[in-house]
Amino acid sequence: MANWPEPGEIVYLERRGDSYTIRRVGADGAMPLPTPDEALPDAWIYYGGWPARDKHEQSVFFDDLFAEMEAAAGGHDRCRWSADDPWPHAH
Image (cartoon, rainbow, N blue to C red; front, side):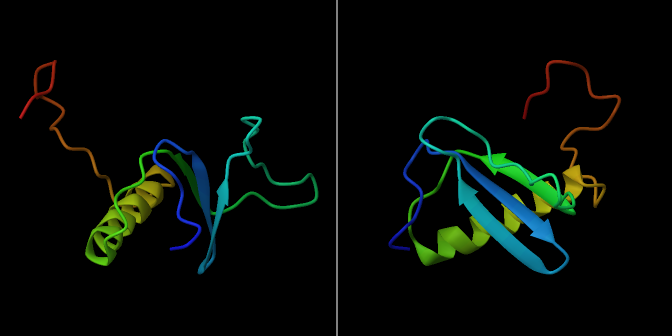
Protein backbone atom coordinates (compact mmCIF):
# COMPACT_ATOMS: atom_id res chain seq x y z
CA MET A 1 0.00 0.00 0.00
CA ALA A 2 2.84 2.42 0.75
CA ASN A 3 4.18 1.92 -2.78
CA TRP A 4 0.79 1.92 -4.56
CA PRO A 5 0.97 3.24 -8.16
CA GLU A 6 -0.10 6.82 -8.70
CA PRO A 7 -3.17 7.60 -10.84
CA GLY A 8 -2.19 7.35 -14.50
CA GLU A 9 1.01 5.46 -13.80
CA ILE A 10 1.46 2.38 -16.00
CA VAL A 11 2.43 -0.93 -14.50
CA TYR A 12 3.17 -4.38 -15.92
CA LEU A 13 1.61 -7.45 -14.30
CA GLU A 14 2.60 -11.01 -15.23
CA ARG A 15 1.82 -14.56 -14.16
CA ARG A 16 4.25 -17.46 -14.31
CA GLY A 17 2.54 -20.57 -13.01
CA ASP A 18 1.09 -19.55 -9.62
CA SER A 19 3.45 -16.58 -9.13
CA TYR A 20 2.59 -12.99 -9.99
CA THR A 21 4.96 -10.07 -10.51
CA ILE A 22 4.10 -6.40 -10.84
CA ARG A 23 6.55 -3.79 -12.13
CA ARG A 24 6.22 -0.11 -12.85
CA VAL A 25 6.98 1.20 -16.30
CA GLY A 26 10.18 3.24 -16.09
CA ALA A 27 10.13 7.03 -15.93
CA ASP A 28 11.64 6.92 -19.44
CA GLY A 29 8.54 5.04 -20.65
CA ALA A 30 10.46 1.79 -21.21
CA MET A 31 8.22 -1.26 -20.88
CA PRO A 32 9.55 -4.18 -18.83
CA LEU A 33 10.39 -7.08 -21.11
CA PRO A 34 11.73 -10.58 -20.41
CA THR A 35 15.49 -10.92 -20.82
CA PRO A 36 16.70 -13.00 -23.80
CA ASP A 37 17.41 -16.00 -21.53
CA GLU A 38 14.00 -15.76 -19.80
CA ALA A 39 10.91 -17.60 -21.05
CA LEU A 40 7.79 -15.58 -21.80
CA PRO A 41 5.28 -15.42 -18.92
CA ASP A 42 2.07 -17.47 -19.07
CA ALA A 43 -0.02 -14.27 -19.07
CA TRP A 44 0.68 -10.55 -18.84
CA ILE A 45 -1.06 -7.18 -19.01
CA TYR A 46 -0.13 -3.49 -18.83
CA TYR A 47 -2.49 -1.21 -16.92
CA GLY A 48 -2.68 2.46 -15.99
CA GLY A 49 -6.01 3.19 -14.25
CA TRP A 50 -5.37 2.43 -10.58
CA PRO A 51 -8.32 2.64 -8.19
CA ALA A 52 -8.55 4.21 -4.77
CA ARG A 53 -6.73 2.49 -1.92
CA ASP A 54 -9.82 1.04 -0.23
CA LYS A 55 -9.16 -2.66 0.52
CA HIS A 56 -12.56 -3.83 -0.75
CA GLU A 57 -12.19 -1.86 -3.99
CA GLN A 58 -8.69 -3.30 -4.45
CA SER A 59 -9.94 -6.87 -4.11
CA VAL A 60 -12.70 -6.35 -6.69
CA PHE A 61 -10.33 -4.44 -8.97
CA PHE A 62 -7.62 -7.11 -8.93
CA ASP A 63 -10.14 -9.94 -9.39
CA ASP A 64 -11.34 -8.19 -12.54
CA LEU A 65 -7.82 -7.33 -13.76
CA PHE A 66 -6.60 -10.92 -13.30
CA ALA A 67 -9.70 -12.26 -15.11
CA GLU A 68 -9.04 -9.88 -18.01
CA MET A 69 -5.39 -10.95 -18.17
CA GLU A 70 -6.36 -14.64 -18.17
CA ALA A 71 -8.98 -14.06 -20.90
CA ALA A 72 -6.33 -12.45 -23.10
CA ALA A 73 -4.14 -15.54 -22.58
CA GLY A 74 -6.83 -17.92 -23.82
CA GLY A 75 -8.91 -18.26 -20.66
CA HIS A 76 -12.65 -17.67 -20.19
CA ASP A 77 -14.03 -15.30 -22.86
CA ARG A 78 -15.05 -11.98 -21.28
CA CYS A 79 -16.71 -10.48 -24.37
CA ARG A 80 -19.45 -8.15 -23.17
CA TRP A 81 -21.54 -8.21 -26.37
CA SER A 82 -22.91 -10.98 -28.54
CA ALA A 83 -21.54 -11.34 -32.07
CA ASP A 84 -24.87 -10.18 -33.56
CA ASP A 85 -25.10 -7.00 -31.46
CA PRO A 86 -25.04 -4.01 -33.88
CA TRP A 87 -22.22 -1.47 -33.74
CA PRO A 88 -21.73 0.81 -31.90
CA HIS A 89 -22.10 -1.15 -28.69
CA ALA A 90 -24.12 0.48 -25.95
CA HIS A 91 -25.75 -0.40 -22.65
